[in-house]
Length: 337
Image (tube, rainbow, N blue to C red; front, side, top):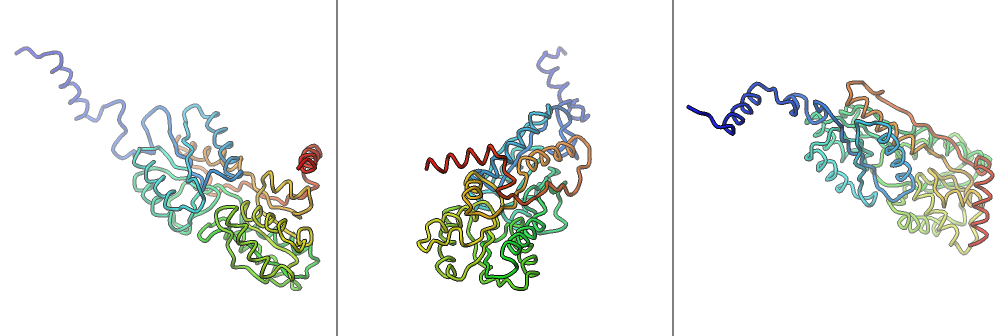
């Protein structure tokens, strides 16, 4: 019996499948995280995309992408930082699309555990950056972040020293469930407690995920405590910017009288350092964070073992730490406003 060319091709293909010799298919136990050859495609999912911090993280992630010829990143995050459900949906969507790895900055330390465990079950590796998960046994390859507790302690010592270890202060928090900022807030309260002449008059107010919400929270705090307030610590970029805006609007002229220590940096925060509205801010290295998160994932995907914990550093930034040319540029801009 003569066999047509099409029949021969179909028969040959079936033999390849039966023998497991298809050159393009991964082995059954490899999972999406271990492609047999070629390029790796990974998702990088920040908490949000609006803040300058995340834009710097993206720059670092893309720099690593440019250096690694066998890797491509897909950068995508929720539009706002208050939507953990949207971030969960993003992770689940990437897992369904067969991504090779996920770099994730969890909006909520508990809510994001489930999709991370789902990724592990599908043998898709996860690198966590910026903010951790609540469970110590979370199945992750590496945690790339600032030592946020230490950053909070730096802020507490900075504010305590600026006040001469006496006075009344408050803490403006970020949002519930954010592991990174909760560590900063704990570090601040632990450090400020050592300054026994300082009273914390408010420590439970959250600024929320946007600057507008932080402004509203700060205005409430100033309305309640402004006349007795000597200092404040704000635990992230939006809280810092929001409190500075509320201070500037205050009709009692509290700006410049209340000592403010912030966290993170932005154009607005640098302007506040130059104008004197802000004493100092604790800064991270977001570009390095994005870069090292992607590099850690690449190490895992190419058969290596990344470090379990990668510290990206933190430091106090004061006016004197800014380059002279940067200060001159900011002063010229402020004079033109």
